Length: 468
Image (cartoon, rainbow, N blue to C red):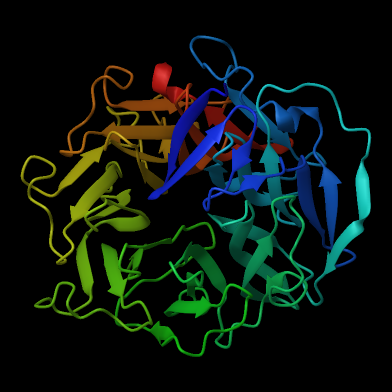
């Protein structure tokens, strides 16, 4: 008899066992190959390269404990002085991990699937039969977000630079990491009908359509749009390309949160220049939902002081937004809970609707910014981002804060409710993404990058800070 376990991904229940892997529709999947997809900037070609051994061992030393480097995976850059960045990471139902970002300082986009507890190398280095061509992109490339499809593949969002112009891009890869050529043009949609200079986040509606949040140009308007599952611009969607939310992205390093609730409404979280954490809700087919914060200065938009970067949703459509308090001395993580009606939830954060915390408290220079947030099955909320240790070596750490469903620090997490981890001496380290790994060995998976000394930088995965 097969031994089975139940895994929950979002609101979809997935049944799997040790002998087979099933997708969101309960269909049996062929186990995915161990692939990495690189965009070759010089030849404008996507190359499918099989992953080597280190990419398949992300959880071998999963328990961090007191082991030196335990639970840490480094995705090395190609050469000294270049940088690998992990901007998105998703734990799959089969407990593999899909990561995305860029390598070689943005010369290539990165999409890789990492396997647990495996060893050995792949003798086939390059599969030249799987290529996709993109023309006109000669500058930086970056994937900022991943969303699972229903067949084990992923939709991608990010940006690429061509001819000195940065533009938002969307893509679609199958469960073997190969770009699906029927999506857009050769697997990429880069002509979105409006001037989208950056896509900070994507989400999938129940119809299979993909919504995105981006910025028209740096320092410009928020853009919220939609494409069909095949990458075509959805002309039934009212594109938002305006300034009424106030959301602004002054730099491509700033994340932008987007999610879809169980009524297919679209929630975007960002920051304006005041600064405020901005939460905007859009109707399923576009346009601000004016029933959200209906009596506010701008119906459809809720604001509170701080900077907003990330969003997660609860089953009742309450909104968790994360960022920082922009306090100045120092900046602290800030997590707010907003009701479905568009006001602070006073059952959260000791009646305030918010909680602030710093992964490295005690110094006015210890600035911390929550760049990603997730909700665990038990309702606990986890926010991650960069945290400066100004009182120590001046290095930036992976910062993690966990609060209870009621919005108070969760003391069982590292006895304080917060945790910081430094990977090298005086690095420039940022955490950009967090995912929860369930199953028989639950843990958190945090991704970002680490500039290790004066040479190359590494994309990093930190697994299982749950058990420090």
